[in-house]
Length: 401
Image 1 (cartoon, helix red, strand yellow):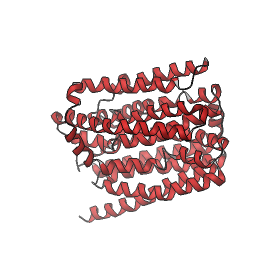
Image 2: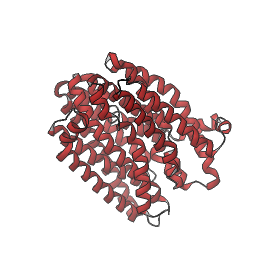
Image 3: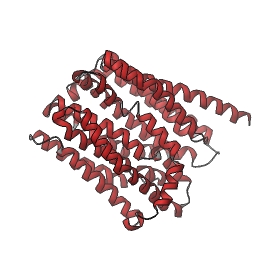
Image 4: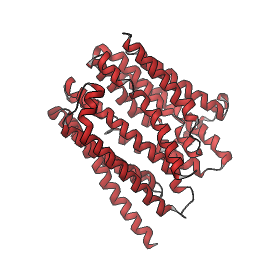
């Protein structure tokens, strides 16, 4: 598949699939009120963090593993990965429901809990496998369409005065049904449920990548929850508006990173250096576009879309975080993992979490949404600087060899 087709298919389809839960947010912010807005935002935050743990790092390493595996080994790899993630998803969904209900406004605790479950179960997605295969179209039928239908139906129910929790219930049905339907195409569901020890060994090999994703979620996916703990409801609502735009940018960046990941390594060392430079350039352009969007239009967009606008300074900091995220996606997934150093990616996100989490908690209490944005930008900036150091060191060593 050419680079242009790969970018078009694997950037747009997974991005649309991941963005669908956010399409109902303008409806919620106006039809259901501030408490429902905060509750759903908290549920998505907690669920997004746990989905990273459930995904077992396959968003980072999965496409590369599938691309390099022998064709007859790939279905077994899918089964091992899916079984391992199911074992994580059940307890994670329960924990997410309890935490989201505790953090959310009391009247909307059920909606927050169910939203956390729905987003957590999204970590079972087959996108990593399909990206590695180079076949994006099944994502439309098995993930994008069911989630879009659930979102549209949920929006109608809320507008007509129905309960907010009906939307996450529909989303749970769509997510589980779509994932189960695709899994049944790869192999029978009875075969999928055998081989748990093999999946446990697979999970242990994924611990480094899983740790990377989960730790990064402490300052990205959990940011809304951290701000909600320290800021007023009004300030939390403002931060959530910025966070929703950030999620859109994060999803687009991640989709481009996935699209390029298999391409960078698929021909071995023959074109690795040139393709790394291309990936870095594309992510720099995407990151710069994200920064400009936040800095120039962020306050206006959040006001129009969510009726809860963020401040100009907060928007600029979200833009900084978006640019840093885009560059670390290329440096981490394409350079460091491509050079066989996933642990360096892990240590970079640990550094980001150490810098960003306490900054977010402390400054959100005193500065509200602006303080939360400082924490996010600090975390992403530290990750970028750390990865630049690691990548530069590795590249120099490779050049001398």
